[in-house]
Length: 157
Image (cartoon, rainbow, N blue to C red; front, side):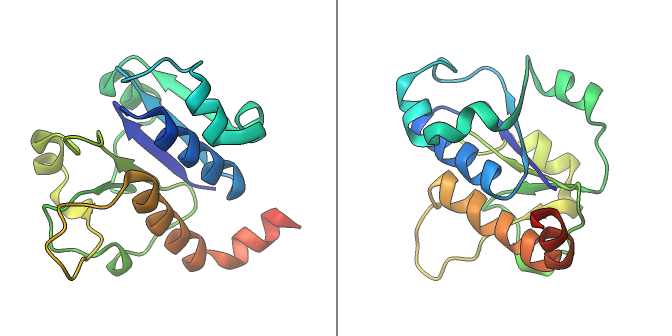
């Protein structure tokens, strides 16, 4: 349905939780190395529960490897606190890609600069620096499902 892209994830529990979400809404999870953990770690599997084995997950050596198989286009959206465009101001289509960066650093500035028109943020009313990555992925992914609910219902039938 959609593609969730984690660039250099660091925390196995977050990645496992995101994998569980991706399975629940029929997304492909794309993991771009280097990771801050081993993909076989118990914490990742525990958070992903028994869904991990059935999850559509793909791994890549780096962002160039990812783009060689998933060419960059205007259907790639980059979650960041460094833009004014709220995630709900975009129109999502089945097959879109949603990028999320390292838990400790976010997406690289150069990547955001190259893709200004498709950067999105999750508005916060307090002075929080950011949300937990698993929460952020859930918010964006479920808005994409909401916008494409007729297609989503057809897949679930």
